[in-house]
Image (cartoon, rainbow, N blue to C red; front, side, top):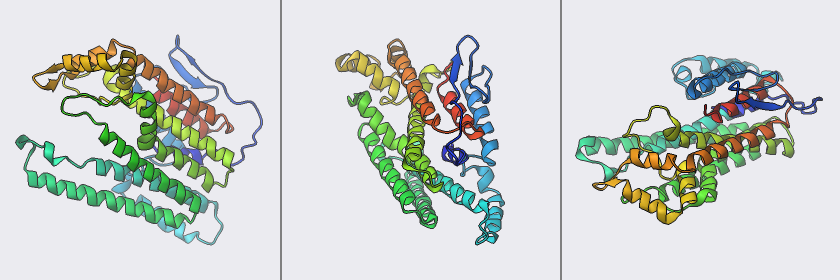
Length: 355
């Protein structure tokens, strides 16, 4: 999403006077807004999200995803780079912005590299109907090499920033990502669909490692590049952390709140609503429900989904999503009103809106 790019657009002077804007939600009007910011009309969540991202892109000045096909398939980035080179040594303000944009691109590269690596197929689980084994084996090799190539470019870009703290932050975020993925793989569902009893506290820790650390530390690094003090950097970190957690929970909730869901649609048995459902229910009853949903050795996800929706897990996950959203908004109150802050607030509203 490129949230760190919007953070870079926050005013560098944090001593602006005046009280912070109050954020409010009117259930009767279905309108979530902040005073003086963009007011979204009642709509479906995907449409609301797309509109919020579109507004944010206008502020940033270009698509928030560096890996967008519009960027990769055009010469725009190359032309901009050539023009920036001509400004070296002129003390032009654009040079500072180009350092900030590089950070956003590096973060996108790291995130994309991880997604590419996650695309590796477990050859032991393949069936004959999935296609030739040699093609899958070749695809795995390409995924590994491609991901490594992106990571190498990210490391090179970090070195060019010539800021040791930023390098340390992004390097530690990469380490967190690897650790988080390791935990995810170790707690994945087994053949008998009996999942590990991790609890919501452990889930939060692992979700932060695999989904929150990169965004949180990138937001902090953005403030470091802008020469802000430790307190401001921490507020940016808190925003990125809670925003990422809220987005992750929103993603986990989709199979349970979509109006139209196919009976064959699967979901992660270690997702937030399921973990909370298990915690409310108790381990023994949860295992019993899983076994009751099994038919001929396969799990009936449609039946299990309805069982979970009848419990407290889904509503508790929605509350948890909004809790992290509110914490993200609290962090933003440290910054004076601006278009960038309004955009960041609206992004939070987009992932905490379920009606």
